[in-house]
Length: 338
Ligand code: GLV
Image 1 (cartoon, rainbow, N blue to C red):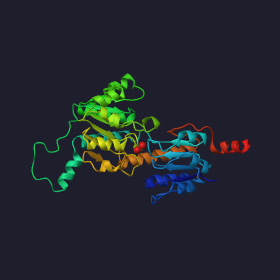
Image 2: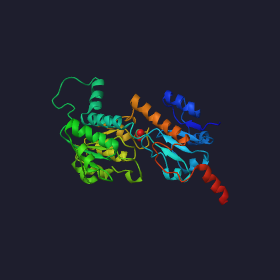
Image 3: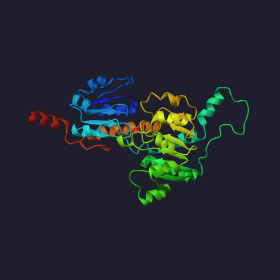
Image 4: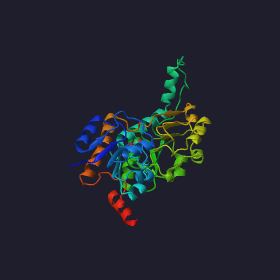
């Protein structure tokens, strides 16, 4: 019996590759080679499925060139690298990895918030440079976390995890903005109150962005939004590049219109806006919010579970779209239409 052919677009945990190889005719990318879009499309030509990370764009042009493809399993909770409409139209299933990274990512959101408000990396650089001569009463004074107001934009699982940490761990007053309000029980558990975005920006001492990237959230935090924040406030982005207008943020940080920022994601990453690299009041990390050994393994496992369940005919575990029909049916329909 021929086994489904699966391409793994990036290097992933060897244990997951071993498991996938027991089910599929597997083509791994063991060296984590960088493929151009054309190269990726060429490698995907004769594949039935692909395990992607957030770095591979799956859109209509690619799908048209890969008629055999039936499933793209993303090893990420965010799936803005998928054009889900095009995937559905081409009969291609998309999946993501929700749940398994929630607490790890919420931990990191809090780590970035603490590092930003208390100027951890800036003061470490000062120490490492040999500039530390003696204690000073005003040296690297930052902003308190405990007892302050935490504003969370995007109140899904991760946002709720950050709210719980803030409210229960640090005695913060939590406000949030989300398209839809949480039910009363979840609001009570997170001790969080809904606010319109403008009001949240004006009220919060610390703003944390956890909203998914979409056309609607593109440059949600631009110069006008930054102008609404307190000059003492901090901004943390662990969601996606493009939600913050990086040039506007660099300018606001340079002019101290807000106190500081902590960023794990960037527009056009891995390139970082030079204005952000030039200011001291920003903590910069290379998209590592879910990066613990246990969680990255769990993400790889869930992506693999999706592929296995799909080809066993059980349906995907964590689908992100609803394909209109299987690709072979669509291809047959197109031929019949000619
Ligand atoms: C990481 O950015 C993810 O979406 O899982």
